[in-house]
Image 1 (cartoon, rainbow, N blue to C red):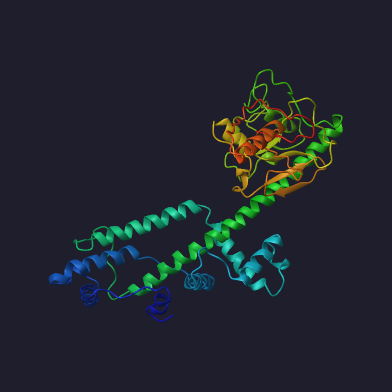
Image 2: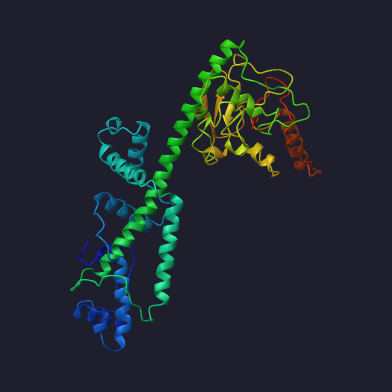
Length: 417
């Protein structure tokens, strides 16, 4: 990069040239030792505006980091190539995958990829150490910055002064092109870092969720061993109630909460990092259920119906999943989408816990045999008939989840809330 930052600006397609009058005002301001009141004539308003802008930017020079330079150049090359989405170079993608699959341990990354993985680790530390700034805050910061620029552009013809800030020292301290270059580097670097770190964070949430399912599987196994192979249950009769009414005598979530109440699991084991309302600490030793539907992270097999589900029942039978989007929508009176994935992991899929203690990731709510875990068989059959009639051009019906449906047999997987 040249001393005035022109090389970087040229790569970015930015013209780092001032207008003729602004250039003359900048020269006059520098000749007066950055004293705008000493600038005479028609250049004075522009000189004051430049002085005000430089005063806003007066701060300690940002640290120079070779990693930030690499990220910036990668983004510049991507923009030159015309890609639609921010992507990593193949070698960097391989290094990131190796680092993540190695449990974020650099010593487990192959030697050829380790230098690049070390830079990924450096980026992760930069983001994780800045706990007070989230993705939403970064977006707000960019918006506020652009709004500030527009405000100054609209007021550039006005006379502006700063009475509550110390005067700039004599002699030039900044080169305007350098300041523009630094701003470009920071904005471009941030736009690359956030997608990368979001992916790492989501992967970490999935790992934590999988660990939770392992802990809950251990709790189910211990409970079943002391209760004739039965799964936890405190109520299996609806009596006119609805199983999605949390805290009621017919709450299905209370059946799952009994695993915690009986001491076979911790409440934190039933809290997914992808659920911002999840509760991880017992509010009361007398609690028998969660306080609301939003606090529940995982959906449990509906325990109301013709027969109770056993932990030692059908091999591979699903008893627990990430929370059901169908129940969340139906409880609020919304439309249910049978093929929708759990919101716990940004709609990408869900974990499912089987009666053999295994937890697997699935990108669809449909099991290999076609059973949809969000719906009872009677509604699945109704949907099939509706689609058949629609394909034939006939009038089709509708269905609605009421919170009173039950599995039609132990082979029917149906979870909630």
